Structure formats: C-alpha cells, structure tokens
Length: 188
Image (cartoon, rainbow, N blue to C red; front, side, top):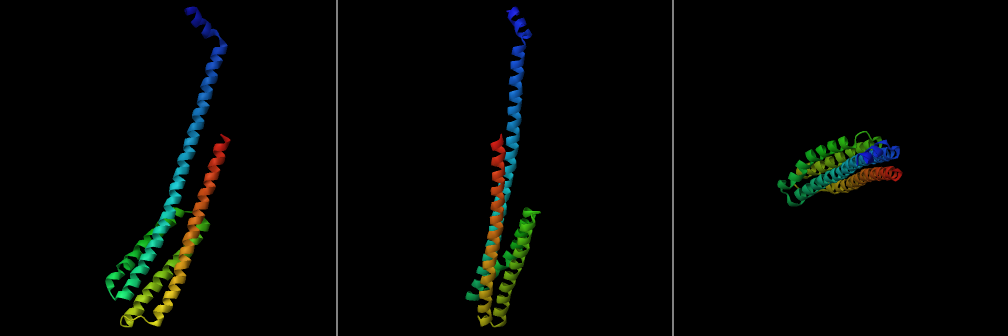
C-alpha cells in the first residue's frame, strides 16, 4: 500500500490532473461569482425602473384625485369634496421630488421632468382658478369655468403624454440593460 502511495506522489501525471481539476473549479467559481454579481446588479436596475414607473403612476393619480375633488365641489357645492384636491398638491410635489432623485443624471429624462413640472403647476393653477371663480360667482358655474375645463383637459392630456414618455424611456433603458446582460452571458 505504501508503495502505491509513493508511486502516486511521484507520478507527475496525477499531480497535473489534480492541478488542472483545481484550476477548472477555480475558473468555474469565478465565472459564477461574476454572473451572480451581474444578476444582482440587473435586479437592482429592474427594481429601480419599476419604482420609477410606479411613482409616475402615483403622481398622475394624485392629479386625477385633485380634478375629481374640484369637480365634486363644483357639482355639489360642498367644500368637503375639496379635500382630495388640497392634499394631492403636497403629495404630488413629494412624488415629483422622489422621481427627480430616482432619475438622477439622465439629461433627457431631466428635461422631460422640467416639462412635467410646468404641466403640473399649470394644472393645479387652473384647478385653483376654477375654485376661485366659482366662489366669486356665488357658487355658480360660469363660462369662465367651462373654458378653464377645456384648458384643463388639454393640460391633463399633455401630462399623461409626458408621463407615458418618461415611462417609455425608462422601459427602453431597461430593455437595453437586458440586452447587455444577455450579451455578457452569451460570451460566458
């Protein structure tokens, strides 16, 4: 038995075989670590993109709530309907700041956000104007309010388009990341 062990110790082919096996295992381990790191990074990017898209939806929902509240006030002459309008402006501003932070340094998206902020401000201004005109006219709907509704619809349509554009850009960016990851794994 000892002769067999001495023979194995002195046989360079066996040593080379063990060394080659160890090197292959080490390479496989490094490739696995790299792949896991890429997958974790990609999952963070996917989560970030989904969070941006969801936050944009929440922002748009707040503006819709404001519209609904003002409309309820105009129809029912009851100021309790204004609560969604009143609270939505603060929430919408907070959501907008979150979106700004999430989007970060993407110049194209930052430009879209600037335009989005202008539209948000316009929409809330027209809603406030409707309330003011309504209150000044002894809670009667006048032609000015009808015209403001048309303007408000145009602004809201533009708001929806801008939100959709920002979301589409985020989805396209995600798609590019997925393609990059697929290429990386295709090389392995």
